[in-house]
Amino acid sequence: METLLFWVPPALLVLLGLKGKLMTGWRLFVCGGLALYLGVWVAPGWSGLLDFLPAEAEPFRMGMAILSGTLVFFCILFAASRGLAQRKDDEFTFPRVPEWIINALCRMCFGIFLSTFAFLLCAATPLRASLRNNGDGFEALATTALLRITAVGDTLTCCRPAEPRIDAVTAFWYAPPPLPVEEPEKAGNAAKGAPPAGKTDRKQPHK
Image 1 (cartoon, rainbow, N blue to C red):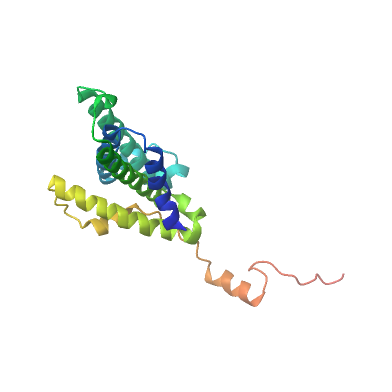
Image 2 (cartoon, one colour):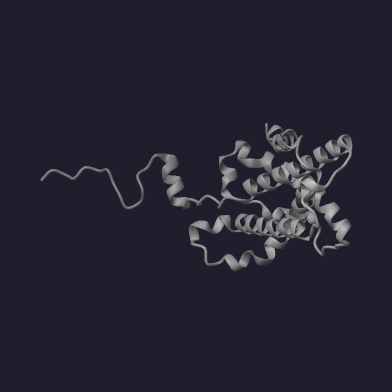
């Protein structure tokens, strides 16, 4: 089920972009990949600035850092790419068949970025508690996709992280707080069916 959901955005973007322009698809692909790469790996460094959040929102801190950082990077990169272009997307002309194929591939990759981003947010926040199997499937797919995208980004940027990426990814996942441990005396009384300490069901003697 999780695998099917993961591939829905790429398939929809390919279908919706059949008549789209290649330059638009190319910008989505490049800006989306860079924004996801930067937004995810920069988030742990500045998530501490979100300490003004109320205590109820504390479990969402990492997810909010990833969300806001990725969106900011994407908007800046996409706007800059359009601003630096000398012509509009409609003014670029390419052979129809190569344009269709490359455009479909670019939009499919952008859809993979979106699915990875959405799955990552679900597994990094308390939202995973409402998912099937406590969000383990979302976590597994997000981990695999994110590590592959990151490997390409590390190669292109010649990045050599101090900590292995597979270990760093585990810091993103939300873990529910442990259940409170019952005191031994109360647990023993509950198991025996005895009333709690300090209370008694004995009847008062008649006067």
